[in-house]
Length: 298
Image (cartoon, rainbow, N blue to C red):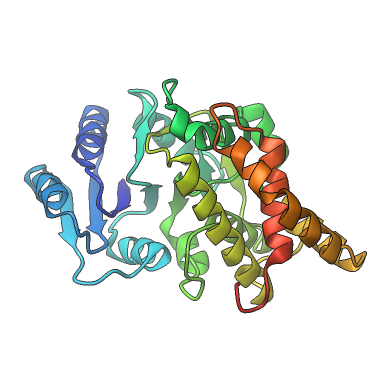
């Protein structure tokens, strides 16, 4: 028995739900697919998504107000009826027709949390070159690589968790904003000694931001990361860039990095917005931005 939980906002997910529905029916299992819309402003998309209610064991509901990424996931879990919860982001899609059965097979193993991995579509446009390169080289890791650092390579874009375990962890609703929710959630799993099983069963991440939007979201994520750290919701060892920042702070080198960032910001951004961006330059940009944050910015 499985509850598939999908939050959405201004995104058409009917084809995703239809695919999952067909896989569950084929597997002949007891299931439900719950979709919560976080008060979308695109009425046309919401109307298309309302067709989900025509499918058996599927539900689509629009919230009256926007409650954010963490609260909506927790609300979905509260509404779920079954023992296993499968969280999926709206802009993902199963990479194979056995996606559900592979997760079902993993449920029989001694694990409370299961992550199948992330893939990216082969066709990408130049204006999303940075997001594509970051995704394929930093997020789309093979199983053998993910197993080496199971908590660090965990992404909440698509994962399964036992409901009783999720009740203990949940997504932290005190932490608002975009970014590093994966790291904060994985930190709680590790802190509570909850086993994390990695399998080879990825979802495809379909919706790639433009270079400009991805850079802006990365800046927002870094501000969120500092909030996580300052409120002790994550430690200094969990995220590599935070670990580097803290080391620079101990060595009194933050000012030097800020000056370098101020001088080189425009040239780095030129590279990041090009058809062939460098992830080394992206790391420099993010580190420089992080070191330049003031307490009021975080």
